[in-house]
Length: 245
Image 1 (cartoon, rainbow, N blue to C red):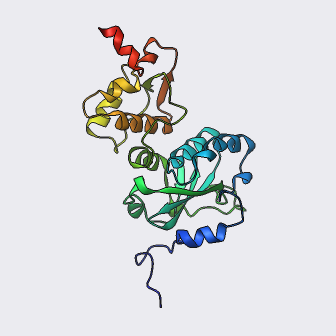
Image 2: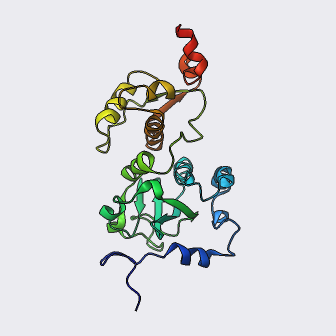
Image 3: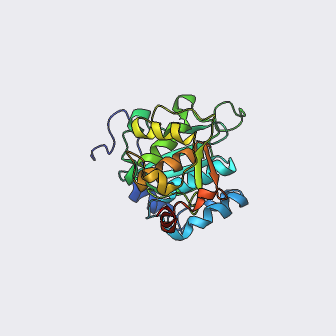
C-alpha cells in the first residue's frame, strides 16, 4: 500500500502530476478562463504570455480578482500538491480545505499557479440553493494577500503600479499585525509624504524588492494612492538624481 502523501489529519490534496493529467485536453494553457466574465477575462489575458511557470501571475490574478470583484477559484502548486483557494473579494474572505496554520507555513516564494476559473463555491451567508463554503474553512482575505505580497514569487511591482509614479498610503488604512519594524514604520511615513519606488528603496531597512513588495501589498488592501502627475513621479528615473547636483 502507498504511504500517505500528506500529514495525518490534513485533507488529501491532489498531486500536481495527477492534476495536470486530468486537465490535459481541457484547454491549451490548463486554465478555464472562458467561465469568467468578459472584462475579467480580458484583464487576465494580459498575463497569458508570461507562462504558468514564471510564478509571478499568482499575485497578478489575485489583483485582477479584486479589481473586478468576482469570486474566483485558484489551484496552486504547493510542494507538488494542489492547493485549492476560492477567493470572495466582496466579502474579503477566502476558502481553503487546508488548516490555516499549515497554509501559513507554506513557502510562498515557491507557489505556482496551475489553473484559474470561476468559483463554484459561494461565500457563507449566500443563497441556500448554492454550494456554500463551510464557514470553518473560510478566513479573512487580508492576511493571505499580505503573505503572498511579502513572501510570494513576485518581487517586482504589479503592472498597475509600474512606471513613473509616487505612492502614498490612504489615511484610513490601519497597519496590520503582519507588518512590523521597518515595514510598519514605512506605512506610517507614507501617510505623510508621497514617494517614488526608488526613494522608498533607499529608506532604512529597504531595498528595491522590499519596497515593491510593500507597495504591492498596500495596493491589494486598497490602501495605496498612486499619482502619476505629482512632480516627484519621475523620482524612479536615474536622470532625476542629476537635478540634485
